Image (cartoon, rainbow, N blue to C red; front, side, top):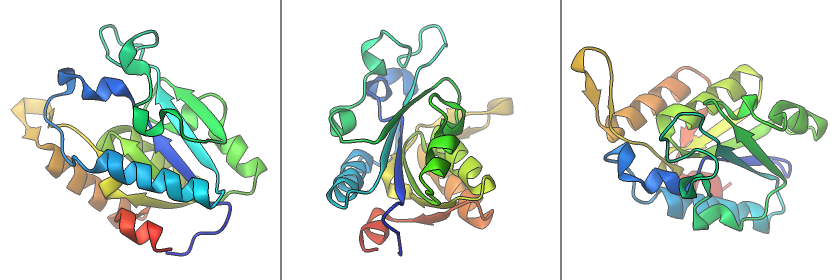
Length: 186
């Protein structure tokens, strides 16, 4: 993979609240280790790092401000970063401060997106990044998600949801979906 010196690593919602049993069964136990590898590589290369935190407005959410679950997980809590975005919705592009303005002011066109949840905030941010004209790469093994129920009793496992995200993003032309090793080899 070929990344320029301004390629930004966008780390989505790596928060302690996602360890709460509230969410159910998860996939990819290696996600945090792969996120840590990406953060270290970006820091070593002095490339920009953006940390994103979800400040839930839902009553009872483990991610609501003021709760212990709102805090970042140790794997990224002390990570060097150039921008810290907070949001209340799925996309980091609808957070504060304005991610698009920050990226554009710096001429950043390449994004590597990782974090939690694969099929929610990670996928939404990657889709929007693609729609906004950024060159987006998503190392799928640096994400994780949880089993989820849908309409009419339909239920998908976390692994099925991650595969669907990979197909949606790569097949739909929003992002290149790769492995962490592919990103680090570039």
